[in-house]
Length: 319
Length: 184
Image 1 (cartoon, each protein chain N blue to C red):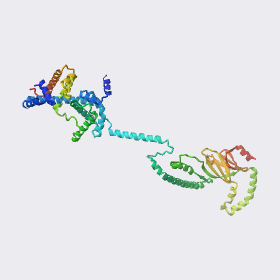
Image 2: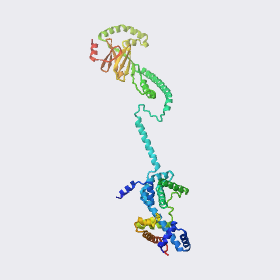
Image 3: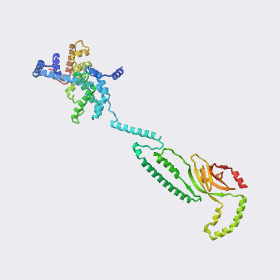
Image 4: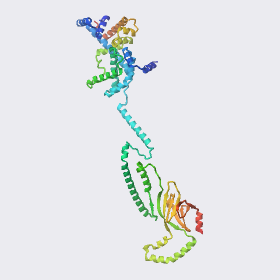
């Protein structure tokens, strides 16, 4: 039997808890005595609960739909790791990009000011020690180069000086924490050689020479026979060629010129020292570089090279 | 048009008293607004407490519905701060879940595990929308017949009472057949 309207209202009021007094007492008595009524009450209770469940389900589904939650394919932890890596990569690239502008090319991580102040003295001492070491190594190099050049087969004794450049670079690298970063380039000596000045004599000179040679030939022979190992004959020949100390330098401003005083010539702007040949003609010293001739006049101040035509040299030779 | 309606709903803003009042009046739009507004903070809160991410929407909606029914039935003051009320309810729910064993935690739907109740709810779902809404407003929202008459434009509460009774009788018939209960 279906529940009637009045009965449904009564049961609803009981289920809501709004029955009281006599009504509630009568209801409870009926509930105890009437089994069908009890079944109808439980049916109404079931229907109400079912309606509430259905209402909640419907609303819940609609709410979940409106939230539109989707489980992400990439786990949250992985996302965090990826973000961290991305930030690190961006940071490194940004650091490198900005860091290249600095002249010292040094990147000081966590450079605390209080630390830098206190460590300056230590820095200075270490820098000095570095310089001393470099100087020592430079001198060793120099000695090694000297010994090598002495052993050279071409007869030229030369000194290759390289440490000056090294030192200047190392100075700028190591002392840049203290000294303001101003790089001053200096003149650099490439090589120092002792070159022979070839004596180019004229015809008259050669006649005189041949006479003197004839006169001295007898004494030479005697000397040779007496002591062949002494090399006295060679000494006689070398007298015709005088040795002069020649230094080849490079200027940062590409200066070309020379200085000739006492027994030393300083040449600036000569790129091929091996191609240089010196010869004397009529008390003038000329420098030949391939097919170019220059007159070197004794001067204690720097003078520019005076180019001399090959004809002039040959005419001098012809007189 | 529907999209425009959704957009307007999405853009609308509610104050705290408006939220409480609208919930008490059974306006479901406010519930969607609240869910959109508070889902992300609640989700973060739940995640911090160690709740798995995929369980957070279900928990949030369950708590929100509980809150919705409470406000509807208890005639809450409009000056109650809804946000703190929601988070307090979440915390309470979380405490209850923690007191359970690990396997039973966050297993939703256990409240409605009774097969008979589920069967009745399915019977309700197959009803027409009008009947469903009428039944929901009477038994889920616990509206009086006067309120139902106003909401559904019935001329008087007696007609509302009659309509509700008719819907209930229809549902009862279906349920009895479904559950194979004899009609004595």
